[in-house]
Length: 295
Image (cartoon, rainbow, N blue to C red; front, side, top):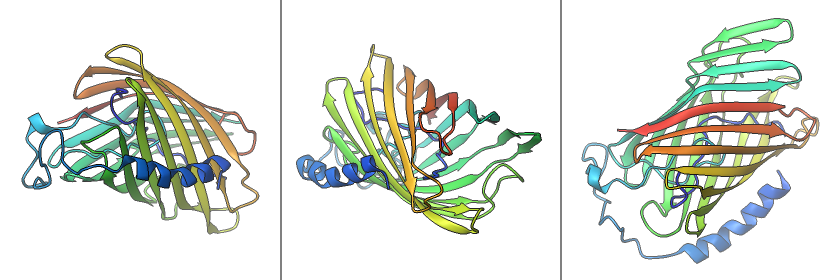
């Protein structure tokens, strides 16, 4: 994540448990952002609209890499047509009320379909969960995602995207929902100054509630501020708010922070943490380290 680009975000998906005040505020701001960001469709790298999966974008015309990790806020930038990008956690550890969940090699594979569209497969190859006296381990959940960039892939200082997703119940017993879930998120990013970026995201989706045996509508609102520390090193801080139509779930608030290191234009390493600051159904602490690379 380099701050001359739109803010990146984590491949790891939150499981919402509680419409946030921040989310509503961001929704109100998006039309104003869109008005201010209108500009010609020409690209700094020439016209790339004719490229697609079977006529790949030449490597010398690839845009700067943008990742959906390490923060929760999604990036509105897609992978260039014909390119592939892998975003993975080496390890991801979460604690909540004495329970612990460890994920290894959680991965988001992206495939550039057109100049402004990519398809993504997100999955957890191995999850180990300790829930009181019960231990479970095995394969986790799988998501299929489709990202469309509405503007800003190659031009200007802001970008907007739309990302629908569906989650398949592929997890072993005790490691995730056994019902189909899904939703859509709208990520936005803008450069505040040279080396400083702001990202925002709204997400709404249907999450299965085992307590009442039906799906609940839930919303996530995030804001992330990031800045370059050196040419290769950058840092970020993030606010993550979650709320829903199930009154029993309550409002959840999490604060995230992390660092990224650009080894080269096609490889970025990251580390970060998320800390819950509300009591109701909020993870206490989450730590992770990972990498993004493209080819």
